[in-house]
Amino acid sequence: MLSFVATALDLGKSGRVESKAKTARQRAHDEIAAEILLAARTRLTSEGPNNLALRAVARDVGMVSSAVYRYFASRDELLTALLVEGYNELGSAIEEADTSVRERTDVFERWMRACRAIRSWARAHPGDYALLYGSPVPGYAAPQDTITPASRVIIVLVSIVVDAHAAGARPPAVPTVAGPRVGDVIENALAFIRDQGLTDELAPAEVAMRTMMAWTTIFGTVSFELFGHLVGSVEDYGAYFDHVVVRLAGDLGFVPVAAG
Amino acid sequence: MLSFVATALDLGKSGRVESKAKTARQRAHDEIAAEILLAARTRLTSEGPNNLALRAVARDVGMVSSAVYRYFASRDELLTALLVEGYNELGSAIEEADTSVRERTDVFERWMRACRAIRSWARAHPGDYALLYGSPVPGYAAPQDTITPASRVIIVLVSIVVDAHAAGARPPAVPTVAGPRVGDVIENALAFIRDQGLTDELAPAEVAMRTMMAWTTIFGTVSFELFGHLVGSVEDYGAYFDHVVVRLAGDLGFVPVAAG
DNA sequence: TGTACATCAGTGAACGCGCGTTCACTGATGTAC
DNA sequence: TGTACATCAGTGAACGCGCGTTCACTGATGTAC
Image (tube, rainbow over all chains, first blue to last red; front, side, top):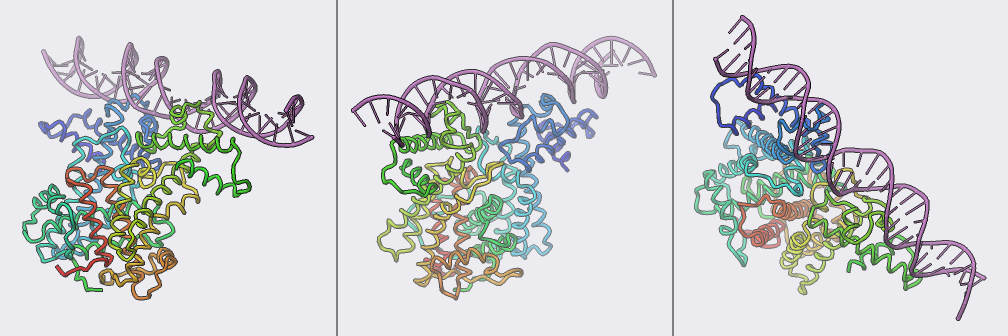
């Protein structure tokens, strides 16, 4: 799977798909690049993103440190590859979780499975998760290439919300507050969601707002769990996460909300 | 203020308050310790928590690196002091924001100000924030001393919620889901909240659950803003945060929720 | 099919750097009589 | 009030370490004729 990802990346970069079968050398190159990436991810899990050292990765993969430069031009490029691979893996996980629900109108089930997939992936890859959603690595700015992979998660969440909205789900009304209106504050996010098919003119801004909040809460909950902020408060993290996610669905109008 | 904090810490550690005025030497020691801490926090802001180097801090404060060991036994101890000071500063900020509302029954206003104080502090001290709420520093385990300062934020949030609950605020009902019940999953958190004065037997578990979710969403939103995950989606971060926090209040029952 | 040349993978040494921590030391500041 | 001794702050050198990156090199694998 890793070599597949790396191959796909290189194809994307070169843009050439001239000869179906790459040369043996090229294939070897891709495989070893994937091996290096795998070693880097293993290090990531055991040590966190910040102490991730190119030399250590080279050591793990049985190479001398300078040899890694045949595959990645710098440490930053390695980090970028890790980001892209992480986002893509998480994206695949949540997409599969969503499409695994055969009854597409069962938006609640789709929501639950998609959210659980995020948490599962994060727990299985805590180092990658910290790299993607923890404090930014100082001195490193993620390049444009990471945006598309990073969007895959929110696209799945939005598509579920859009389907729910089409089926009549509505978030609760909120009182108007002073200051800019919701629609203006998240204008770009709103445009993005409209692109995903939400054309209803009645409540799209509120739906978008609640979707962003839910997205935030999901990752906030996962981060709190992984970063240790729930120790001593929560006994069963899985059950707690489920309770969170159910309420988020409710706040999006998926399930009937009775007045308390 | 910094020297006050450091003094308080030392008093707490030694336990002695024998002579009201510490010796001149002792006072100088405290002041310089505070100076080192301040330099460390400045470094924190400019470089993030992970590359925080004891040697660099010493350089900033005009000392040779070994001299720092007169004040902190190790880099870990410096980190702990930074954690404690950060949590305490954030705790003071939110407490002041809450108590600044004279009309104590105006729980909505108290809520808004408390939440805004968190975001303001985080933006003013992004390095400290990353240290407290970002990915954990690898190889460092926060000691027991940090728990009490870390709790100050949630205590304020809970106290507002408790007052609101006493005044009749109720979160929306949610459908029962399979698995452990809310009250069992967050048993310890619930006990903690009961200690804060929430004695009503009707809905305490749901209130506690919603409080934890709100707490998570607040910090999730701040983290997303500071860590760059809202770039391109949100135009006005302050207004966005307000919209989030208003909805959290609504989900806690602070403001009347009309069916959509 | 065989040879000559180009391309590439990986080595090993080196550069300059900064790190946390230890240690013997010099002065200055405090304390006891 | 003055002296002798103890305590402490800060210095500077050193230890051993790992880092990212460069560079000239040796072989092996590929390509063109």
